[in-house]
Length: 130
Image (cartoon, rainbow, N blue to C red; front, side, top):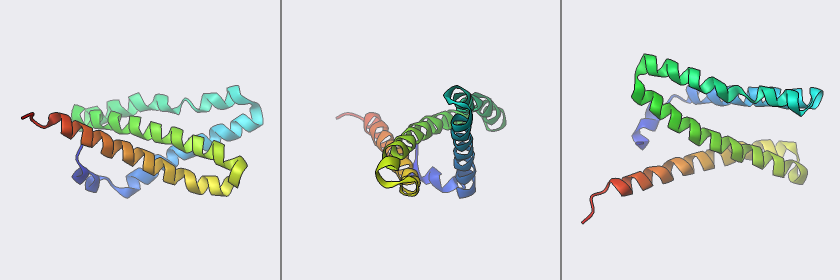
């Protein structure tokens, strides 16, 4: 986990992943409103796609890249929980627009905070003891 690797990540790639997750979540919400929570919950199974995607990454780019994908997916998923909680709490308090403006920022802060915190922890553990 090196910050220098962040330079290699394309903004377009991040945007596509976030947009895909947001679109599936929006679809799940619409299905829930129209047909009930059971039907909407089925659409939230999109994380099941992750293993297939990681398998393709492993075949194309190797196990190391697939491992990085897993770590990133876990951090992103925790960030999405923070996103959902932000929307859930803020909609009744400040309205939908404010919630949807705040939620991506919360996602970014949580995900980046976890990444940098874990990185610092791993560095600290890897440092030789005196």
